Length: 151
Image (cartoon, rainbow, N blue to C red):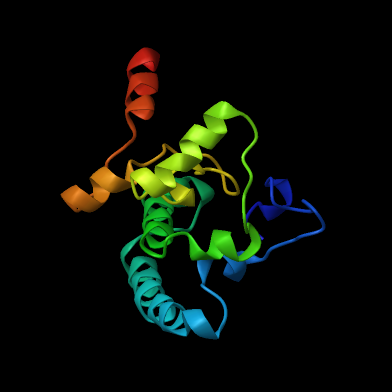
């Protein structure tokens, strides 16, 4: 399961989503996304298996940040459709959460822009808009400050 039992989603409101529920868009309306995901992500996964050594958890963890980034970019490109399948008409509590959710309308943000590290082991968060603009993984500023403080 890859740690789903420890995530905020396991057992929440009676829902126990599986991998595909978040990683593959569901439903006939999203068939084109699901097909693209199987072809593109599947091909990338097969190539990664041939190119990288995942024989130990340490070696897997070395690649975890970039794999998380790829998954986040997929969600960003899909406008977090797999999140929205379950989380309809979100009503964020409090003023700061409401202001943050306003970014979906004013800045083109989507769920994954702010809600990273919910399910899998934590890795540095990505600035997805900057990553799209630069064509490479760009970390959020808050990650960079934390790394500098540790040095």
